[in-house]
View 1 (cartoon, one colour):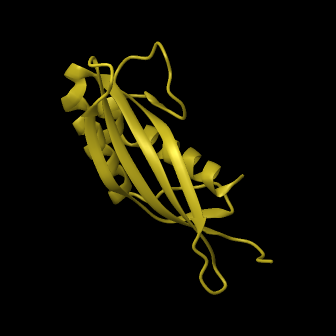
View 2 (tube, helix red, strand yellow):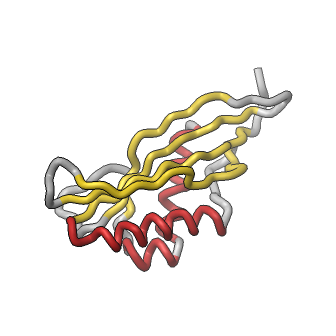
Length: 138
């Protein structure tokens, strides 16, 4: 499994297991946007990664965008979800599939804005993470 896939899977599992996130979003945490789902809901956006190797250690820096979609009157719930996501990452370590380990993961940016559809609000959180991959280096 790639580092990106392991991180995304671990992130989704982490949010689904977190009581604070569940209070606001329930089980509405997805890898892709869904239709026919009750608002607000969270889904994964863009992921960027680059090698950040050091000495004999294989490191990958990831930047994952999280998107929370809701109706205009869900603005307060979206703000609560952004706070719950931040708290979930600040208070517990992220478990990933071997051979990947999350050294740290934290929200570095959050925003709430209207979309081109005036009925829809969007929350955005950018997560920055540093992963270590165990195994033989070439």
